[in-house]
Image (cartoon, rainbow, N blue to C red; front, side):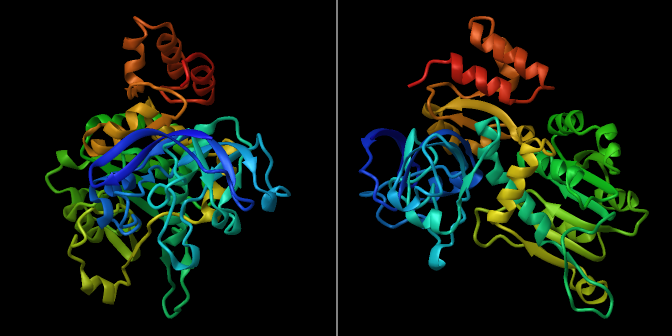
Length: 420
């Protein structure tokens, strides 16, 4: 099988290439990849190369396929798995394998297994671990985004609280408590807002902060007060850049009792320390954002750790149960991962988008691997539609769905745009 893929040869050395995949073994599965969303973790691997813990040392000779947030269709199934998987079925991938203690993962470590490809081979350990997931939803992009959503869901499950005199941890955010998402108007923050509002365990107060007014406006347009109130959640959006004393203001929203749960969605020292300052008694700080700097650090008030039982956790990725929860909630329409998407592109746009990811505004960059297509912001489809009837129609569909990407837009894209 001929495949076209983006492969990593070294730090900042990514190449879009065509090559032959080997014949699958009896314990492997061949799939066609339809969608892959670009993760900041891929950017980190791309700029670090072999210094990244998941990247093998010999990629200059044996390059790996990047991308780990992908979904598509099963093409061929090895004999070992024919009772569990069938050609033509849709799939999603849980990339956090942790197979026999190894850090190897799709998108970082395998020469023939990654998301930025037209076709890829799924090795036996994925099926052995239950990480090749059946998917019955309408759109492929929802399945791709179930991976970043699983990271968000995992972080919600990882928080914990205690009772005085009891050493048993009560897992999850505090039901009916006060929750803050700092630097939360980006792609992952929007997913976190969606889950906080529509999960079974909800806060009574949800405060979302950022210093980007445009991002905050978009977040508020998607998750307005009425939508949140219907779920029993009071939601507030705060631009901390405009406040003389943001810590005091945020605490005032809790009547100075502090927050039960605080999530940090940017690896910024000042944001981490602000999160620590606004914790209430038994407050849990979750450091969600992954820093590039291995020496990243911030101050923590240990007086409060000792006397008011504040504590900190950190999560990196979700597990298979988190991903299954994401898929089920999406299939039922309880959450909409499309809130994270701000750009659409083809496989030829992956290299530039990945290497410049921190400088490209907006949220998730969603890639359709069967297309050659310039990375395009959802807001720019209307302008491009003046010269292209397909962009014009996609702009109409985006507007129809409150400025969001949708299954309807995906269907039109795949049926009408030229494929490679």
